[in-house]
Length: 234
Image (cartoon, rainbow, N blue to C red; front, side, top):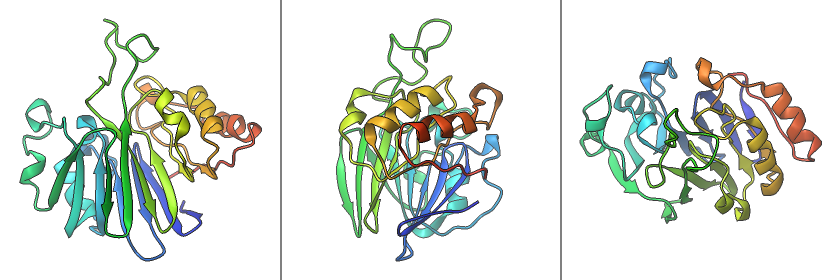
């Protein structure tokens, strides 16, 4: 299902992969991959900008499937293919203009405004492994705010709901709701209420067993808080 919101068409393709297309034709992809989850089953190669939030979502094969030859690829600074099991190709080896970013940076990329936010699990929070270690460490990932044709979209990355998120100005909010390694649907609904976006479209759930979520219950929760919400069943 394609969601139309203001000047944007929005498609959630699976996991954290979202395709955004502006009225002027600019196409952005968030976190296209990894291939071993079977996220992408096509090769559109129409992406002007590809955003990769952290190492778990870095996959050169998937990037090649969505990016056109003149694309810009933005990756978090911590990404190191040498630490990944599914690829040994570093971002700089990709045949695109590649830029590394950290949290709390801002850029102007032609007609686009782009900024990054912190993305991590709190050490004392609920999203830690059996040894009490956060699944996503501070400094190893980011979220993205991108403004396209006047619409500001927020993909927070694989993260808890953080205090730093509360003051953001967001039109379209793409929260992960699968829990386990990210905020769950309850935490995401509470953050949506604080952000007061014009629309919420949940992502990052149901791709595998650990992140199964009741998206309809999430939608009801968000709607009762007075925030517009839509579901994309892919």
